[in-house]
Image 1 (tube, rainbow, N blue to C red):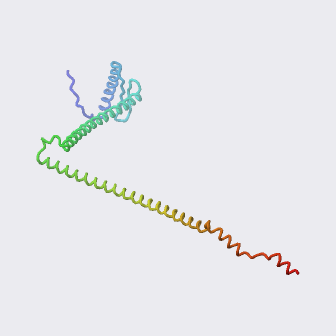
Image 2: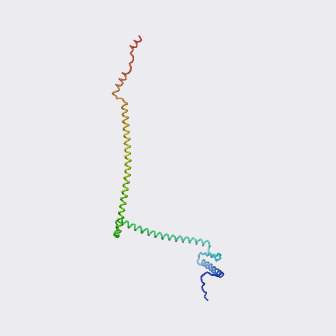
Image 3: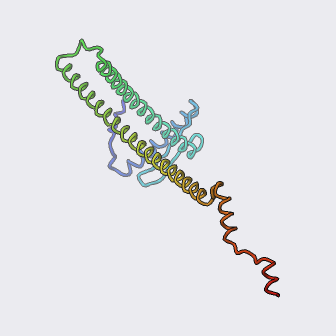
Length: 219
C-alpha cells in the first residue's frame, strides 16, 4: 500500500502537531549528525518548539557555529559591497573617459582640426565661441596692461619724490657751506690790512710822560 503525501500546512490538532514535531525533529537532528560525519561538515541546528522549548545540535560547538556563520555573513556582505563599488567605479571611469574624449575632440576643433564632419550650424557655434574667447583674451590683456601702468606710475612717483628730497638736501648743504665760508671771510682780516691796523692801534695808545718833564716837576 502506497503511503499518501501529506499536505504541507499547519496541523490544527495540537496533539498531532506535537507528535509530528517530535518525529520530524528527531529525524532532522539524525540527518544533521549523519551529514556531519559522512561529509566532515560543521553543522549546527537550532530548533524552537511552538511552546518555546529549545533543541539544538552542533557537530563542534553551537557558539562556534554561530560565530563562524556571523563572520561568513559579514564577509559575504563586504564582498557584495566591494563588487558593487567596483562596478560603480567602472561605470564612472567609462563615463569620465568618454567625457575626456569629447573634450579632446572639441579642443582639436578649436585648434582648427577635424572640421570636415561639422555641419554649418556647428561651424557657426564654433565661430561664436572663438570670437567670445578672443574678446575675453583682449579684455584680460587690457586689464593686465592697465595694472602694469598703475604699478609703473607708482614707482615713478616714488622715484621723483626721492629725487626731489635728495636735490633739496644737496641744495641745503651747498647753502650752508656758502654761509660758513662767508662767515669765515668776515672773521679773518685781510693780510694787507694787518700792518695798518697795528699802526692805528699803536697811534691811539696814550704816550708815556718823558723823564725830563718828571724831573722839572720835582724841582
